[in-house]
Length: 445
Image: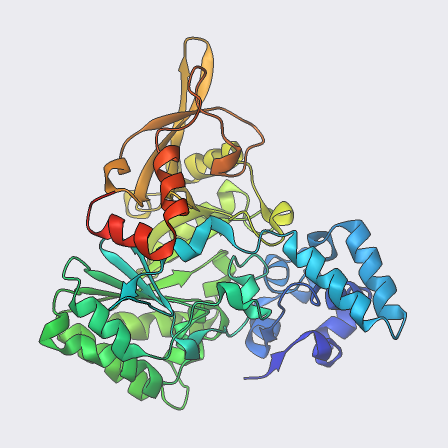
């Protein structure tokens, strides 16, 4: 696999040949936002005759419009005037700080074990624990919308990571309420089979029998399907997954798929088939993104293709309020319209897709529809997952807005000063990470 960064843009022949005028702006934006792309994406997925409009190009190559025009101009000035490295670094940091690098109070999810905060673990919901293996905290290529962008540019304050699998396993053994563990990153599928074995094999032991589902969040089907077909240690990887399935575990590959073109190559289809032959369920999820997939026809084709390949459509997310959000964000009203139009035009097997869903601080909130009451229009919302389990499934209203893109931009109905969950959520935030999480897990919230 050949990987390109902003220092190696000139080594991408397609970019030099088809879009030389874009190289400077890509290089400038890549100083602020992480950029990494491999030769598979460059050679197999991007339609270079349609650059810069090609959705996979926009999905992987930073665009000038992702930064404020004035900030971009100042970056260009600092880069062109040699000797201003300190000024350049200060500017880059200021721009990053203005992009909400710490959305949704991620630190609230961190649990503790024997009085010590666990590194690389989030007990996000009562039944679900997330683990961030340190060897998997990168990706085959970076998505330009990724909400974990700060950890790829060295922001250690949001870098959840651990190479201590034993600590994870001990924590899980003490929490029989946990049924699902999600290995995430980055991308766990950048790890070798040997590293994955160290983390996953202990789930075959009786002490962890209550963990019935192992999820693996990955973009490998899109960005490096050879991982499941022909990498050097692919046989060892597939044998490990087979042992987990044969033991009775539900192994679910949570595939991040943003556009139907990502699964159109023969090797991608081969990878899907190889995983399914092991008994692995592949579920597809991704956000609705302006410039990438913000049309009902794209989502219709996306879901239809997934069903054809035996992949389960799972979630349409709302783009998180971080990074170059102004470039990608779709208002909730439009996201709901796209979802409804697309879901109405597919068969029942594709109607498993839920959304639009916001993974916000208080929990996972679905925009279920709109209501007209007493001459006022409202969004109908509900929690799919929540920090306080009493919030789950409870419908609530927010004033309709054509422009709101996130939960904190919505207003409660007239006569209500705040939404029903806000006071309790503030207490979670004030309590801090371990206390808030443990209260939720014990059902004391």
